[in-house]
Image (cartoon, rainbow, N blue to C red; front, side, top):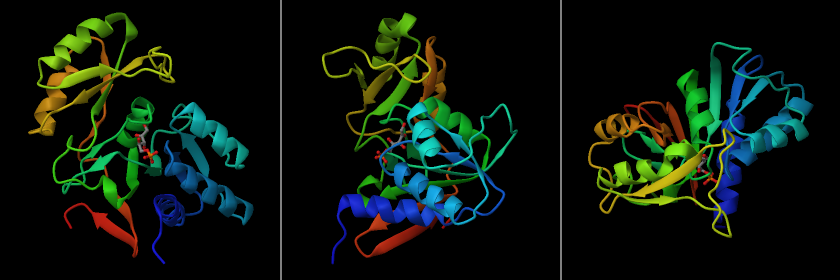
Length: 231
Ligand code: 5RP
């Protein structure tokens, strides 16, 4: 029997949650794949697992609370043992684009202090070159969004302010806006692009997660493939 997209998400989410060990501080990612990992962690807690979760968004915080996961924030801990999160694209170096779910800022902060970052995706998200399947989200302070759009355009992309149905700009959990940047033939040099984006006034964070993922669990119709940095 071939697994559909939702079953693949459930499979990788569950597999990642089963990597978690007693006593760990666990970063809880955001998105439609991460929800399965959080649900499974809730189940394991009922079976006796003892962990503390650090949610990466208000939506995840709500789900984790309902699942019975004890929660903390980065004010309580210097480091996070293991984080489970989704991604929008994964390239052969395990570099990522994240942020289509609008939570890239807190996700990146948590990832940056995480010892083992576990990414869960289905195989449609595996790309040869970043930026070929999805736009690159950039979180920007609302005050300077018009100028940020023009500065991003000069970097070679087609920028679009993300809106909610009805055309109102979407606000992130930190009350910023998101500009989605579509690169016509993908991103040439992600590290240099990231450096240039970060120089734009108003930019708070970008969705490039370079050199951060330690393990990528890929859901395929025949099971879970494990990709680790350096093979
Ligand atoms: C949210 C993210 C998500 O992890 C990413 O968009 C993947 O989400 P999904 O599992 O729903 O496809 O980066 O900011």
